[in-house]
Image (cartoon, rainbow, N blue to C red):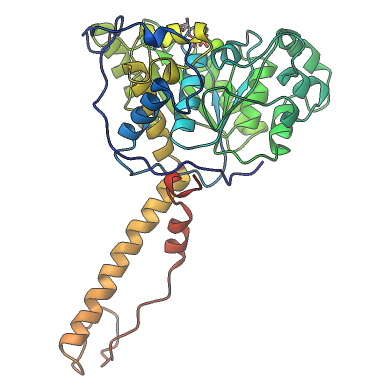
Length: 397
Ligand SMILES: Nc1ncnc2c1ncn2[C@@H]1O[C@H](COP(=O)(O)OP(=O)(O)O)[C@@H](O)[C@H]1O
Ligand SMILES: [Mg+2]
């Protein structure tokens, strides 16, 4: 598995912000709409919907700012053993958003229901090579991955109904917990992100995902009992971290189906933020009819209705995730330190130039000396590290 992605070019020209939509409860407004978005659009290349999706991304990327590209492939496990909290919806829409932002993204559908495969418009009837073959038959991942129609840079390893038997079949296999990890490690294609959509259980399929990934992304539905059952998931994450995968950590919590009109939603959001703190994304995903309609057209909301509030909120959530990359944060800190050092050096050199031959002010613990202006220090390691992380926009078009 490599991470030298083929990345899209810089974004430009912002477009107007989110609009409200029928059933969008985030802002309470209703805007008139035509029927065009209800039809399945052709590929994104040069269609009105394709252009609208691109414009939505450009708006999110604030006119050419671009997004940082991860230094290594980020493998995110989308898990919550509760059903219906928005795991699949979040997986496919975040994946599409990251791809539209210019990344190369693979969705691994690990739920026997195959909802992620359906939503991405990827063929997953019984005979299609699938993630079952990878886990149980040791087929290379590259033989089952399919490109997602309509979204460049987005790929899917589909799930078929066969996967329903995998929980049992895996029990007797060698290295039953790490079969997905091995398959991903052997995957040669460059990727920026792998998002794994887990089933609503904590069995061997979810354990395989937790062993393969480094980050756990937990969607939480803004409803009563939102945090119930999460303790069990967090204990499993701890167990896997302790015994099988020391890199594993909960990196991201995303609040889904947020209804801004209700007090319950804001109370749940407050409770979740109080409990998890900085892991919770600032962007909440609104409850939106467009989001729930999109899968029946084999699409994500990003292509189904690019300008809808659901689409724009997933784009913004993806942007937050891209900017939260621990490597990017380290690089940003390193860059800030470097700039501070350079300012300090420049000030010292200027002080010496103003009074050549005069004694340099003595800092505590230093011997007083007369100095000629110094050449700037060699490029520190921090700068070299910071430069590694160009923006996504700097890659190939
Ligand atoms: N933000 C949202 N607004 C409206 N409906 C949503 C939203 N997110 C998910 N849904 C709907 O809720 C249901 C459950 O979502 P899903 O992603 O399948 O959950 P999970 O994968 O956790 O079981 C689906 O019918 C989906 O369309
Ligand atoms: Mg699901």
